[in-house]
Structures are given as C-alpha cells and as structure tokens.
Length: 416
Image (tube, rainbow, N blue to C red):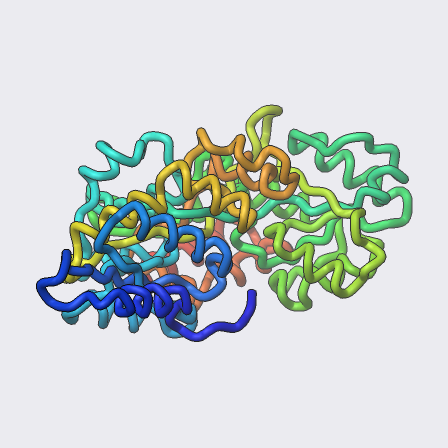
C-alpha cells in the first residue's frame, strides 16, 4: 500500500468541498463528523475512497474522518481513548484484543444490533466469540485471515499426487510420498503454537478454560494431548527445527529454496516466497489444513479485526450506522474481493470462490477459533510457555508432565 498521512486525504477533500459551498451556521443541516480509527494497511486506498464516497452520499450531513494507526503500541492508545473523552467513534481492533478493552467497561454493548441488524448467527466463530464478553457483543466481526497449507505444485506432481489431501491420513501419506522423491514433504518448526492450537481444537481440547470466572491452563487434557501427538507426528516428517518458531529462520525463505513441498502459513507469505524466488511464480497452490475426516477441515486460529464503539463516542448513534455498513453484506463482499480477506459470515464464503488462497482460508475459517477470551491472555503470550512445552515434547519429554507444567504456568499468568 502507498504511504499516506494519518488522516485520509479524501476526508480533507470532502471537508473543503463542503466549505466551498458557502455553508455557515444556520445555512443548512449540521455536518456530523464521525471519527474512525483503522489499522495501517487494513484496507487499500481504493476501498476506503469507495466506501467514504458512497457512504457520505447516502448519509446526508455525515463526514467520515479516518485516521490510520500503527499496531505497535496500539493497546495503550486505544485504552486511553476509550477511557478519555472526545472520541474516536469507531475503532478497529484485533479480534483477540476485545476482551481487554471490554474489561474497562468503556465499550458500548452492540448485542441488539448484532441480533437485529447484522445476522450474528452467521458470523465466523473465530471473530464473533472473542468479541463477546460475559454474554454481550462488544466487537463486531469485520474481516478474517487464517493459516492454510501453501504447497509447491511441481513437487506434488513429481510425487504423483494429483490433488491436495483432505484428511490427516491422506496428508501424511502425501508427505511421505514426497519425501521418497528426495524433496522435503513439509517444513514445520517445532514452536508453531498457532498451528498446534488448531490441532488441539480439532480434537476438542482448549489452551485454557474458564471455570466459574477462573481461567486455568488446559494443555494437559486428553484432547489437547492428542492434538500435540499429531503435531509431533507431522513435525517429524520434515526437517524443521524443534526448538524454534516459524520465523527462526523465516519459513518463507526455507520454502523459497524450491525443495520444500509444503508449509503452514497465511497466504500472504506467498508474496515473500516469490520475491525471494521469482521462479516459483505461478507454481504455488493453497488448500485448507486437513482435518480428521473429509469435508471437515482442521480448526484454525482465526486472526482478523473487530469493530468497537466506545461508550464515550461523541457521535455514537451515527458510529453504529457506520459499523453496520462496514460489517454488512455489500461492503463485506467488496472488502473480501479487494483485500483477499475472509468475509465475516460463513454465508459469504462464495464471494471469494474465484480466489484460490482466500477460498482455502474461508473453508478453514468456518471452523476457526480464537485464543482464550481472557483479558489477561496477552500476558500468556508475552512469556509463552506453550513454545518450550512443544520443544520438550518433540525432544522426548513425557507429554503429560510437560503439558502439566505448561498448564500451571498458563494458569498463573491468567490469575486476576
């Protein structure tokens, strides 16, 4: 995306146009300015210009002022904004951040709008669930992205694999076939804990559970241990390091060398792969992470964004209308097709049917989940006992003992 100033240029143009008409107090309807915070690079300039132009044309007397924020340090900035006064009216936040902001009691409860106007029963679970706190919907799902399998078509063809696998067993069989050709069937680092989370959820387990308001780690449950057992099996089929995550070294660089058949990543990683090895242009494919049975892809961690409205929003009623438009079918379709995002409803998956990577994401997102909905989950990720737990198991430690230790550390981090 092109560099830009924090305030969208289109907003300035709109304001000048209104001033040029000679409007003065008492000359016409009062213009209401809706302040919207979006995260940098969440939308393209073209999408924002379309939305702003059409929304203002359809809502007389409304001006949208969009300010772009950096992800770095955004938590403290949003907290200060919602606890202060004067706006903003609408804020884009990471889906897993909603709980920490709701914990301040400064977010507006959008449950009624969710049920009445936005068809919340069709939302992606990985976006809707973290936006719901204590039965109230504070975050409105906006867009999603999640991991898929990125694969090298030529290496699949050389191994005699005609189509992507759809079950775990087909998947491991395909990896072993590719390994026998001399290529690496899969590259999976030992501490890719987001991928592990999907396998745990697929088995019916959780990273942590809420027991009467007390969060406790759950990596030592039988279901979670089954998820870790499959991760260990899969990881052993490649040459990924057991004691590092997917960025050490960056798996895009490993794949770009041309002799790895598969990695698990968001589709956006493909751009980095092709940049490092232009010869792979047109040779990459995508499929959902296989589940235990055909027709049911593996559960995945759903990343993405929700929209929130602070209680102190100066233009709260108008802000809610902006949220409803951005989360509605028209602009969800536009956003998904423009930005290659997964739209916020399972019923809209068809709008990305022609986009292989996004279609693969959408299939997985239908069974997506988010990290535990505790306002203190960020504390867990800061120390992240899940990573050393994974390495310990991969290096031969008893899984139950290692999982119990990690679960206790998670419980301590989540304690109020």
